[in-house]
Length: 294
Image (tube, rainbow, N blue to C red; front, side, top):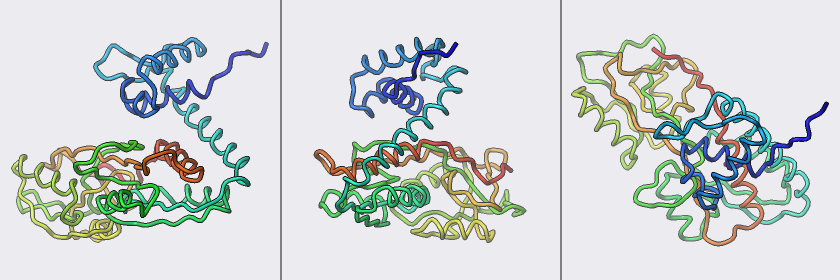
């Protein structure tokens, strides 16, 4: 006999937010709800599913085995719901949309923007690629509508769409010197991750030298692939032919890398709201790394 139970999308949205943030409080902030409402929605979802979805015995809220199973389905259901609404609304949404993106976040966008352009052919989309702090200044000045940034600086706010590890990477087959200063390929001065890498190496007593510095992701990737240096890269930007290095090679752990979406204050126009939600869903999806572990 067919079950009459249904998985409510609002409940799934709260479930995914808790799973991705590891906290009912942070999930509530993302969704614009109070914590008690998020807790109640997750409880209702557990009752519908007939399974406990989170292990609350740890300091950080963690998914249960059943929660791990549901998470993939929940993300796909939310993405499908968004796609259906986009197709239905495409004829009524028009106007201009100016998106600013940091270089290291831009590699997520081709498929998202291509689908957005197909769904909303009457929206005039402009994309500006720049460093995070320049994009935030442009947003404050009213020059762009959305800013997808990887560094916050002293600014707060924004919606965290993705977190992933920063990793040390080198070319496959490249020998990393253990006694000589480590040749580094990092982003140009002003990058917080560059500073964090240097501080981590200094704290670990690992000698290093600056071999390559670039304002672009492609520049750092090229330096790594040619064997010029060991690079500091977000895990999702690793390319074939790269391997990941770690403590076994005498390299210290690195901080997480985050992608945050900022929007102009006030109620966003329909095109801005649609693209923001589409990016939120797509950037939350797991992406398998193509690099190997040394």
